Amino acid sequence: MNLSVSEIAAILAVLANGIIPADGRDQGAAEVDAGPVLAERVESGILRDLYLQGVENAELLAGQHFGTSVCLLETEKVYDLMMLIKSHQPGFFKQLRMDVSALYLSDPNVLRRIGFPGASAERGGYPDFDQPQKMLKAEPTL
Image 1 (cartoon, rainbow, N blue to C red):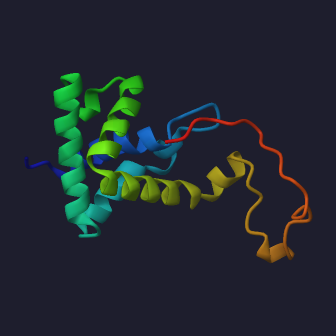
Image 2: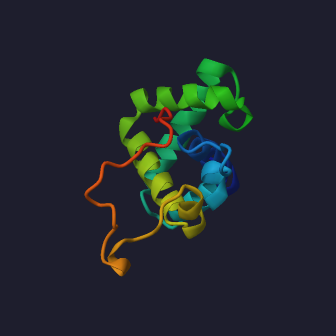
């Protein structure tokens, strides 16, 4: 299967949005253009084989289980595809999850939107470090 860079970017964008989907706060992984950024890394050789094999496998799984391409999947089916990828190719799933999370959390605007006040080292630590932290709302994760 020979995919173009733009096809790889589109598939990675869908998969990245499966890792961090859009919600009421922002567009999820799309907020940081995770698909195109990861495709550029693949094109430059960073984890190229793992990502190419993962993208091709995702396309095969989408075809076998949903009868369509990754890019044409309905949003609710992307989660199901991610669970298939997790079980069929755990190394790719873990790397994708790590890379998408790192891209997302490296954006200062994202940090503000999710309520993270920033690094504590610049202020000498968090004033409430010794207090139990409150969870806003538990949401399912992959």
